Image 1 (cartoon, rainbow, N blue to C red):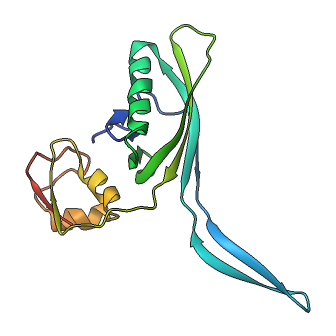
Image 2 (cartoon, one colour; image 1 turned 180 degrees about the vertical axis):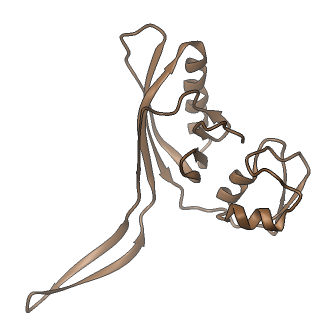
Length: 169
């Protein structure tokens, strides 16, 4: 999906990027203290990335965008595109409409959590006329550069792939 520098989830586009955006990633660590004052730290792996924020949408377009994102929440895991970061397979865990004193202003708050159930990648997929190479890369845990090398017929990773076009993974 070509988002024009805007954040998106599934096929729903944020008409204005969030005013506040926090991206948190970490690692699970367990500390074990042993006699003599020493300690050992065990790395138990990466925690899911959490993306949270808040902002405002404006007017009828903003209201339509709010409901489109609310509908996307019901679709489960999908591609969250963040312009400064790129795609992330995530679930929209929380989507909240907050009260606003100003007419035509829709204030919202959200929390996305990285999806851990990556789909098993087939050797190739067919374009559906809506998805772009960025979304396919995120869906199957692939690097966009790698997919561009395998698919020289694709010139722009942000452009929707024509329906029926074969993309090697």
